[in-house]
Length: 345
Image 1 (spheres, rainbow, N blue to C red):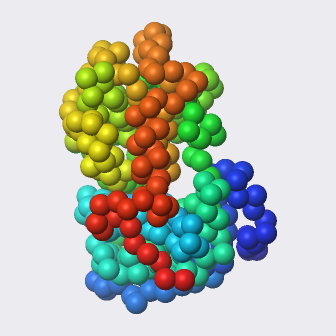
Image 2 (cartoon, rainbow, N blue to C red):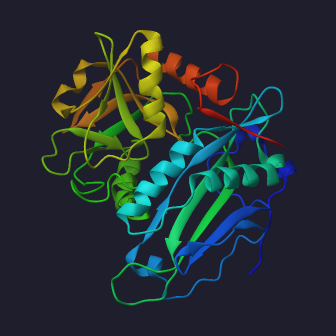
């Protein structure tokens, strides 16, 4: 096996896209005999795992995504990593996996960023350092049961915009497939949910759409979430609405925007959103760690296109929310207490 490590000079920071790059360091910890190892930084991006490892056959895996942001003063921020480990531990409990200590997780994220600090994109480029923590079962087995041994990894890669257009409206369509079952693993961030989304996402791309709008798995009547992010809509009477459902992944970006919406006179609301009512929205968008905030110009449902603010321009509230959120993340504006964690370089 050969490893080609990335170098800072390899990158055009303003045009790097959203892809994996093999950076010098990552964090790993190992769970065995009922406890986690001390854990630490490792250099190799390859791992030696048994062909019988539980994760390969029965999918016992959870993951997260968060970002490090270069500030104007040269420092680096992490955005709400405490929320990531809380969600990861909830996902782990759903998949019969051990919790990882919250303080140790935040310390590990800081260590990965500090060790790879030359790859945190410069302030003003719009790019960030994306962190991907994940945990998976390593016990060799052929019978269906939970693993006893686990590995936790946190690696980093510099990224640009998740959607090629950046902060520009894109088109979506509703689909016939479900992302997750009503009482299934929809609220867990586990790889199986994303594997299920590959085919509908591919079909949407072939048809000229950015991705799919998933409807509720029981009735196919209510909006759930988008292929790679949560959904929000802004009504003419000033409501910031996001879907409420037991099969939606709880989004940290969504929680943040629900808290910020009142600053702009918007009333935040998590509620059931019938797809038949989407014309009530003057603006629609996708929100998530990778997507940040991405405006949705139109949704095609049952062959009919529903256009929101514009198919070419960003709506005023969407832009205000994007500017406010990213200003907090990059340290340009103060946000609510406890949202930003400094990384001591």
